[in-house]
Amino acid sequence: MAFVTLKDMGSDFHRLEHFDGGDFVRWQRKMHFLLVTVKVYYVIVNPRPPEPGENEEESVAKTRERLRWDQDDEICRGHILNGMSNTLFDSYHTVKTAKELWNQLERRYITEDATSKRFIVSKFFDYKMVDGRSVMEQFNEIKSILDRYSQHKLALDEFIVVTSIIDKLLPSWKNFRNSLKHRKEDINLDELGTHLRIEEDLRMEEKSKSEGQVEQKEGQRDVEENHENEVEPRRSKQMRIAKTYGPNFYMYLVERTRTAIQNSIPIVLNVESDPRTYEEAMRSQDSSFWKEAINEKIDSIMGNGTWKLVDLPLGSQPIGCKWIFKKKLRVDGSIENFKARLVAKGFSQKEGVDYFDTYAPVARIATIGVLIALASIHKLVIHQMDVKNGILKW
Image (cartoon, rainbow, N blue to C red; front, side, top):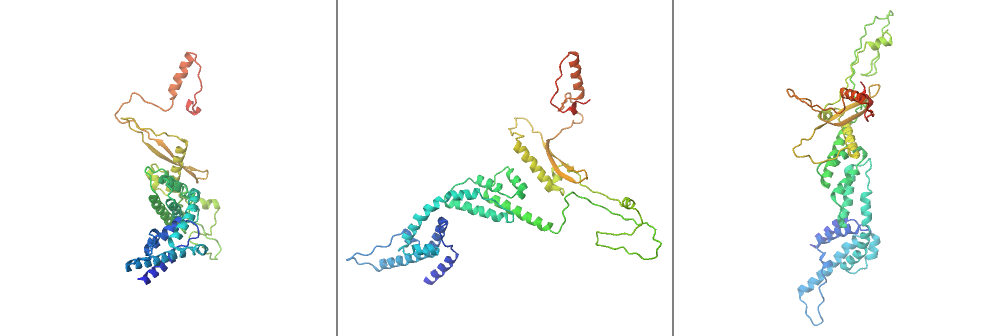
């Protein structure tokens, strides 16, 4: 039985980190688990059995109990000392009992550990994620800092923790960060870790697929080439062989001008049209650019306070909205940027229904003419309205 205990002690000591004066609470908990496992922790909480009096006869059971306590106290004291660094071992090896050693460590390092709480708080809020490292690896480091919060009995609202971690994400995760911020339901720390792991796996998969491929940054362009060589041969009888430099490069020996050759090559450009619905934008090959444009528009709306959320009046129906997508092109036809606008849906007149009153967002030309005529008759002064001049043109 003693051999098994010593064997377990050796394996446990090998896994336990040596205490060097830092993070005493965590080391104390690990040591507590170890002492409970080898069944010697009781000597710290239970006093030593008393010695018998001069004229008192002691039973064999009590003698064995006291001898066992002394033996376990020495084992417990050895566990604690072996869990320290060499410097601390030299300072505390003269302490006689395990209880006295345990109490001395608590009196000294619990006070010092309490003063380090403010450093733990600042370490979490000052933590910044960096490129070149796994996001999940850095997320686990943040969780280890939060675990030290619980060790020091510090409470921090989980919503604040999740929001802070989302703000710490890399700039390349901007779209994913915005999607998490605009979620209707709140997520906890474990759910955030799941989302980060899935997103990182998808990014790694896309990165592996894109290796060896050439990215076309100026949109899609399919070119169909048809080289027609209806040229009379040279008068020389020398045989001429066309050279080749690969499957995508061709050389022809012809006797024509450059303009004539270019005109004989039909070029068909297949440029993807702008999507009309949100679903088409998400299915297109430029879906990532449309997502970025949508997120930038939402950030602009939220930042400027364009809308104010109010309760829907009773019996009223909300007006729907839709996304308008447009590509802004340069002079040479290349794509400059992707634009997305969120507008209210328009409604056309229903067939077979007559409306007596119609409304327009701006004054019509006929209405403006009537106003000018009335002003001329009654000699009224016309003030310029705060609208674009293009609307007032006849």
